[in-house]
Image (tube, rainbow, N blue to C red; front, side, top):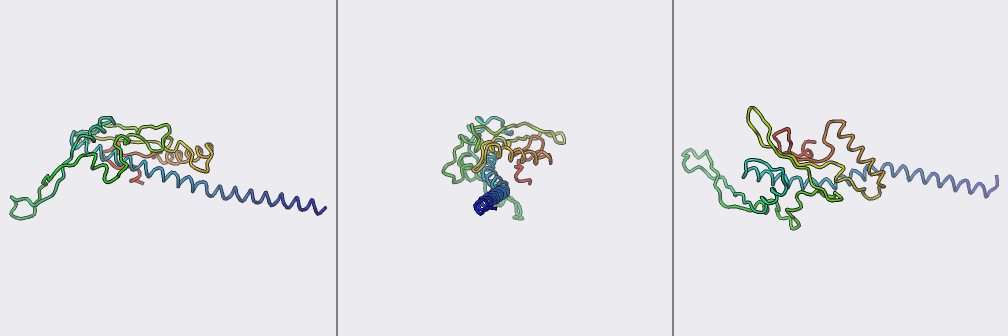
Length: 213
C-alpha cells in the first residue's frame, strides 16, 4: 500500500472515530439538557400556578366559591381586601387556654400576591409562561359532593405541549418534539397528567401535581 493512500485512510478513520464520539456525547447530553430546560420552564409555570391558587383561595373565602373566569379573578384581586388576623387570648376564658382571632387591619389581595416582587403584574396571571403564541391556563371551577355536602373545587392546568412547544437551545424542532412526546408518553403510562396543574375537579384539594410527586 502506498504511503499516501495509507495516510488518507488513517485520516478518514480518525474522522469517523471523532464523528462517532461526538454522536455518543450528544446522545448522553441531550436528555440532560432537555430535563434542565424543562425544569427551568416549569419553575416559572409553577410560580404562576401558585399565584392562581392563592388568588382562588382568597376569592372563595370572600365569595364562598371558586371562579372559572380569569377576568373575574383578576378584577377581584385588584379591588378586594383581606383581613390581617392575630390570635389573642380569649378575655372571657379564665383558664387562659383559649384564643380568638382579632382582625388588626386589612391588606389588598394584589399586595398579598405580589409579596415583594417588583415585576409582578396581576394581568399576567392567566398566561402560561413560554407559550408562543401566548396561551391561557385552562381554568375550571365547580362543586363536588362528599357525604351529602357540596364542596367548592377548582383546577388550573396546562399541558407539556403549551410551555414546551418551542425547542430549547441545541435542539432541532424534530428532536425537541420527540423529547416532549416521550415525556408525555411516560406520564400517561402511569396515568399522570402530562403537564402541570393545581387543584382538582375530582378531589377537594388545592395541591399542585408537582407537590405530589
